Length: 404
Image (cartoon, rainbow, N blue to C red):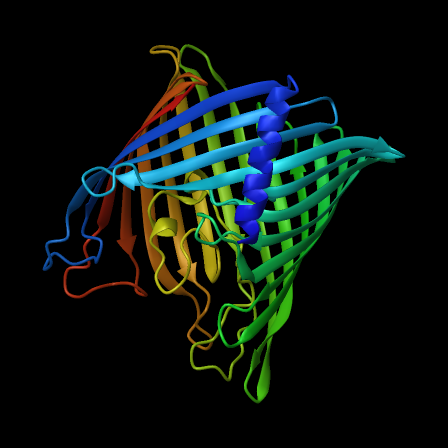
C-alpha cells in the first residue's frame, strides 16, 4: 500500500509538472528474445527441448520543472508470446529528485529507482526484469573530488506494486575520484525477515577501478562479510572473505579492425557454520544481480538451490575475446569461457560445477537498434554430472533491441 501511495503521488506531481510547463521526456524500449534450450537436466533420457519468444517493453516519462526538481516514471511489461504476450505490468521506476547546493552540491532521490554498485556482486537492481529498489538515496560532492552516498532500500521483490518490507538494506559509500582512477569504500547492511530465522548481514567492500574504458578497464574488489542468523535457541555466525578481479583491454589490428580481450576471476566464499547440515556461505548478499554479458549467458541464469545471477559459493574464472572487423561495420564477433567451482562444501574441497562456452555475434547499428545472437554451452562438472551420459546443456538466444 505504501508503494501505491507513493506512485500515485509521483503521478500527481508529474501531471502538475506538465501543467507548470515542465520539460518532458518520453521514451520507449522494446526487447524481443527467442530462446531455444536443450538438455537442461544434462540427460538425453528426457525430452526437455523448449523454444519460446519473449518480449520486454519499457515506457518512461521524465519531467524537469527546474534545475532543482525532476521526476521519472517507468512502466515495464515482460511476457512470453503464446502464454501472456503482454506480460504483467508494473512500475519499475517512480522517483522524485531534488538537487541543491547546500555547502556542497547534493542530490536527494526518493522512490523506486535503479542503483548498482560496481558489477553488481553485492547490490544491483535486476536489469532483466527491471526490479527497482524502493527507498531514499542522498549523494554529496565533497572537496578534493570525494563523493558521499547514504541510502536505505527495501527490495521490490516481485517488481510489481508492493515493497517487501521484510528485506531492507542500508548503504554508506565514500568514493574518491582521481585521474583515470576511482576508489570507493562501502558498508552495506541487510536485514532479512522473510523466514522465521532472522538474518543480519553486513558487507565491507573496497573497490579500485580505472575510469578509462576505451583501451583498458580494470577493477579489483575485496569484500569482508559478517553477520548472523537468529534461530530458536541459538545464533549462527557468518564470516567470509571474497575477492574479485576483472580486466578488459583493446586495441587496433592493422588491416583487420579492433580486438578486445577480457579476464575475470572471482572467489566468493566464506567460513560456513560447520554445525549446519546444509551450511550457508559466508558471502551471500540478498541484493546481488550480475550481468550475463560479464559472468556468462547460461550458468548464472540457471543456478541450483540458490538465487540466479548471484555469486554466492562461487569460484569463477573467465576469459574472452571480441573482434570488430573493418567490414562489415558495427559487427562484433565474440567468444567467452567460464570455469566454475562450488565453494560451499566444507571438508570436501572445491567441487567442479562445470565449464561454459559462449560465442556469437552482435550488430550495433546505433544506440536505438541492436541485434545479438548467442550460443551458450554448459558442460556439467562432478558436482552436477548426471550418469550415464552427462549431456552438455545448450542455449541459443536471438535478441533485438529497439529504443525510441
